Length: 201
Image (cartoon, rainbow, N blue to C red; front, side, top):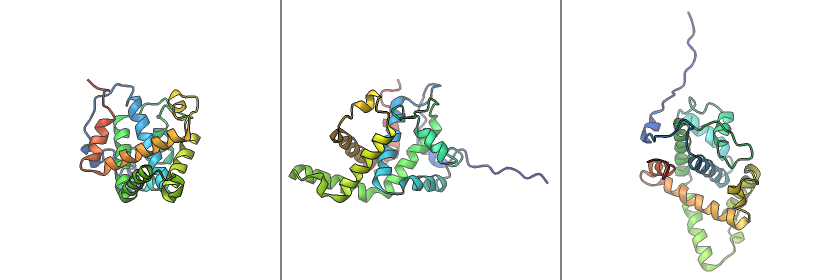
């Protein structure tokens, strides 16, 4: 008897919750690729072990047919044009949907932490208290700084724009707001559509 090869689910139902967006043969636009990777970068900075948790989440969501292993995950994230080792291969609509689902689901798991960090940041800004006095917030910003500097190409104009720790911190805080946005009602769908604002007619 011939043994049939194992087949993963190539069309997970959860992807159907994100509408199809008309894109060119070159795949998802630059802005979408950039934003997706930065959101994943922020998740990595939020909690130690998040990189491994992403792989677990891929399995839980039955996305292995799209992202079978960490090498493919790295390749998809490296379609971000600001990466040191940026991949010129396109990011397909299905691949982008899978990454957005991962972002949304992991954000939901981290909702309490994200919301508290944003509340604390606003209070410290209002009272002019140095961020260094808040251990969790400072740790998040330090990890994000390290990830951003080590993985992004310093010669790219988009990276040169973040030429100070303060500007990278501003980016890290803005990404927290976007992650929290993903946790709200229809947040995943709204974030998905926002990635293509201005890119389609």
